[in-house]
Length: 327
Length: 283
Image (tube, rainbow over all chains, first blue to last red; front, side):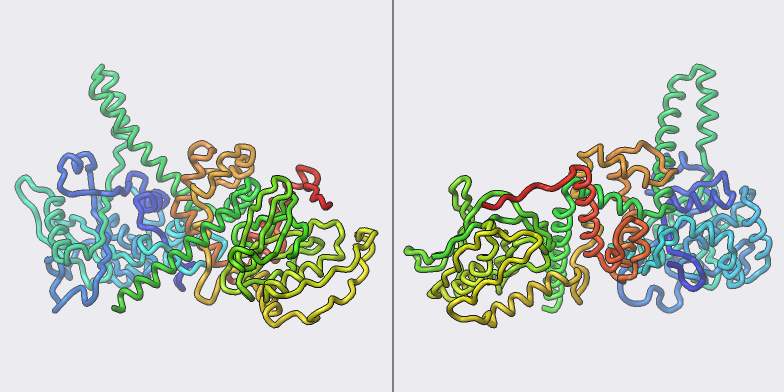
């Protein structure tokens, strides 16, 4: 089910982001989970990283920001030279975030629709840029293609989704280097936030690491659910070329190491393909054939009985914890 | 003491479907000399063992015909204070006595000091499908079913026709019905799995096997579809969609009807494969 704007709920998953960008012509980009910023070797293996997407859900009461102070530091920069779009539609928040990142990466190949969109919004204020993205049919269609709710024959109440996977429950912030400064692009803030430059042996990622850690630290411990994604250049073609060279040069050690990394990377992509194929699929026929097959195998009644039992156990548990809370 | 030939039926899970088992048995009601209480027992006439022995207090239970099972002589021992149900089917070849046995059982269940009425002499010609049996003479003793029996009967009819779920919410989740554990009986049947693989996405990478199915049913996309289907079914408006799956339109009126119709669909296709059902013998 989409909201009135026609944007459906999707999951905030590297597989979804990658497929979205690829379908819009960004053939060299992938989006990956970034488990930590503290591992220099890991970061090196993922380079070049163009932007970071920090998605988080704050579980706690009260206002997130007090007294106009920017959580995580930095200062508003109304003269930001790059692309910045406001989040206008809730269901589109992940796509807006990823475009806020990608449109600020120099010389990245993209399809005709994205190129036109970026040109069209040049010089617009953030609100109009946000509307441009939201009203772009190609972008909206690419986004909805990966939404399992959009691909289902039913209109589904979005509140059915796993609470943890609900895209609109998460807030998206992009960290990207522009003109020598680290910028934080938050579609719900009035302007980009500048966090300063870097010098010496540092790179923008070091500034990003400090900034993000400061941000995380500004919340009470345990109150923040978050995830970090890296928008980076796909290194698979590069690794395969290197493998060819290493083999030709007889460097067996290097070759086998590369082969192992390539294998791991390809397995991950196959897993993404698997998940995305399921997102695009209408499962009704599969559900029916599974239940019918189970009935023929004599197991449907037992399954139904167990399911009823689980549900009544859940109710009991909920009733008990509800009672406990009242005490 | 009251005894009559009856077999047991197995109930299919929590549904209102029962499958008669052919084992020859005997229902007996008698007050035990030991504890002075009324015992409702079922004896296995083939092994001689008493496989079921229930102690029943007055008005605790009733023995009622299951009307929704047409053509069968199925009865249920139903309890007023719990959801327990025991299903039986009459094994006496002479159907004309059924009403008497039921009447007497209920008389005893309400009050163990009840004196069972004598049944009429057995009808010599066994009731056939073409002619209805001769109506039985009215029994001696109280001729009206008691209030208690009427109330229990009403409850049984209601529960047989009620759809799944209460005002408080659904009583099951489809995501609990389809899990790697519950699907084990299906995964053990490669002959049945073949019919399922064509329903997977054509562009799904990997082999078509039970492991792939396990992965698929645990994926977020599949679970979201299950939740969507459940929600759509509970609107009761999915008749068109279920007909396209070969199910009757009633299967689109709720989760319970949907699952029951699939159960029937499986039964029908199994019977077509076997070419007939088991014979239930009476003697």
